[in-house]
Length: 91
Image 1 (cartoon, rainbow, N blue to C red):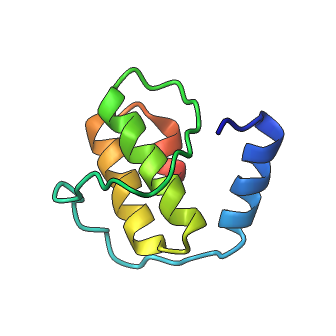
Image 2: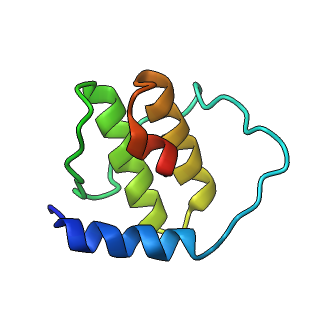
């Protein structure tokens, strides 16, 4: 499944509407496994790191499943794998 810029913008607005606050730094997410059976959702991004893309897609799948804790961990892992991957920090 692919998303247009408009649908990605809606996702951004919906996710940021929750306004979560973090007063402490989040722990490193290096122990996050790539899970199977979460669906086929794919959001094309600019990263050249295939594993970072996989973790980002996994994070998006977790967002849709309302598992925000696992989504954050997946996005953090994507950012660790590709520090220049802006969407991973957005996640």
